[in-house]
Amino acid sequence: MSGDDHSEQLNLLQTITLEVAAATDLSSALEIVLRRVCEKTGWVIGQAWVPNKEEAVLNFVSGWYCDDGELKPFKAVSEKSHFEPGIGLPGRVWKSKQPAWLENVTNDPNFPRATATRTAGLKTGVGIPILARSKVIAVLEFFMRESRSQNEQLVKVIAAVAAQLGLVMERRVIVTTRSDKGDVAEFTVRDFGSGLPKDRPDKVFDHFFSTKQKGMGMGLAIVRSIIEAHGGTISGENAPDRGARMVVRLPAARGEIQKSKAAA
Image (tube, rainbow, N blue to C red; front, top):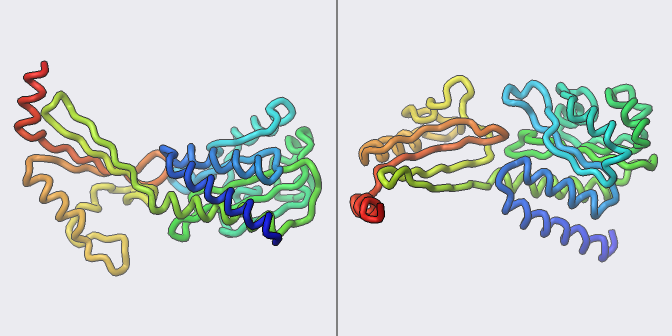
């Protein structure tokens, strides 16, 4: 890799990292990555897929297209598609957790959208997984009109971007606050991890419950006891796209209540 190529890759990673850090959710972050990668590396289409809540299929979540007119049929088919593990380009990447390069997608026996691909004049496709804590949280796919043999350097660039996004989303925590008529203060903490137990999200507040091998399972139990001792509540739920959301409600300080009433 030349010095110029290395510099461009670093610039792309830095740009995406900064922009993703400002994204409000996974969908917005994926849109940023798709657009930046296509603009810098020459793909005409970039699409993103995420597992549904049951983690049974991949659903289309966002896309970037250099020309909406000619690519509309393929876009429409993709938006209606759902892929099980191992099926189609997104599904095989999801199952293997590895990048996949198809020199000509129209000739691939495991590509359900082949007809729409021919209509759009697309040939080469590549799929890249985005991992957080060794779990696939999204799959990116890119297409171009030329038939091209696998370009290892191009795969490495996109994989590096995907890895960076995975790290950012894994470590990212969003905190928001609001007040309810001055009497109650609400704090919401949102992360992009693996989420809460689907059958019973409130189980994480039980004593000695932990999703970590070496965890004691006391952290959230202690947090809840402290909040309840101050007359507040804490609840947890899984976020729509990824991760969990904790909501803490506490009585506002007496001075804040009086200030609110005086202002009214």
